Image (cartoon, rainbow, N blue to C red; front, side, top):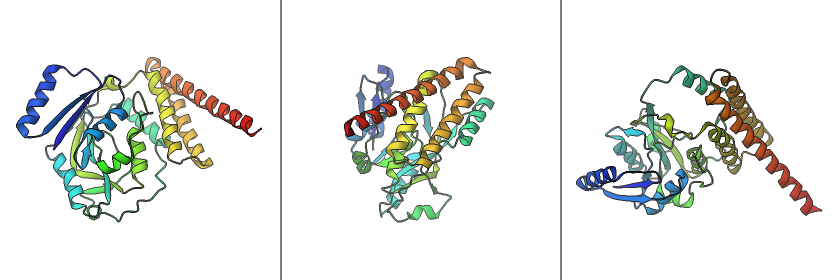
Length: 286
């Protein structure tokens, strides 16, 4: 057992000393890594390279685990003697009931078909025994980064995409798309955790709007969703979200209109880039 903390923020000395002493008293190896440039995928990759265990359990800093969480996750991998399971996640619940505005936004994203395109590659591995008990596990691919875990061997061959910079919107889904070709990803029904949502962890609205478009398009295209039907689905999803943000701006312009503008800005930039690439390709042919 080891705990690795990658800090690109401002962890104070008192908190660091508390972590060190807690791990020492529990007999757990502890390593503290400091980097100056923020970036979640890069931090994850750094931790993977420095880790020694076979299973890497990622945790967000606003998540609190049930005391039996790690035991339940590790037992899934231990019981999987065939190595069919490549990734897992826990059952995550919110610390507070969602507000009306949050429920409306979630409903809009469902209408938009956000992350509706499933992985096309089928796992070559046999069905793991644990999936026969749906009270224990269920198959999934929409994995949440807050409680996801993967085999370290798979992560060394499939690093997190460090181009998803800033607020790494979707780096967990991108990894799930790629890992689905290697084996099964399952959700543990018994490994429970609570998410204490902190709005301050989100980036500025304009930047958030840009990353909704840029990261989503990058993730979908690099995972093979480039057919006409795929592009229509992607375009539909982004259009519904953008129009909804424009409508919400009538009620709360300070919160939603900058996010709408960010989406439009990113969409225009992507369109111009595609247009320029086609012009350059045509010039090369001539």
